[in-house]
Length: 123
Image (cartoon, rainbow, N blue to C red; front, top):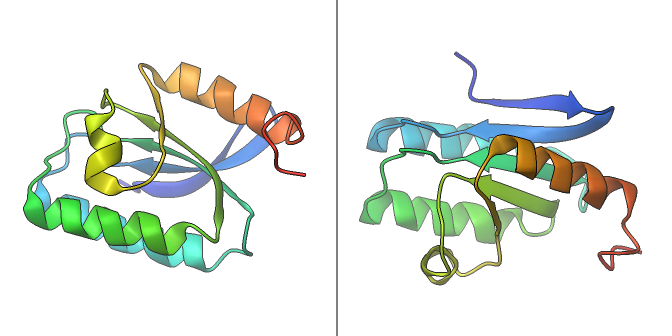
């Protein structure tokens, strides 16, 4: 099962990163795959939705995630995350993430973000 791929919603393209129900080894593998894909894209071009529902977080995964997020900063315009809540996650990863309760909510936000860049300060 592919866990990192570009998909479309309402005609807008975004990268879907599925970490749901991953154990530690799977999380590290998904992070590595997503890193390759994201960093092969032009800077400031990637919109992403990451699903971490019931994913395994441990110190090693947290460290890999921190490196992943900081290294992707030049490429990612907007990142929606599903499956985690609260500001604690922001402190752990050291980057502002937009959190949603459902994948549908995250997709809607990404579509709006792509369609209205001036509203979000992207222009």
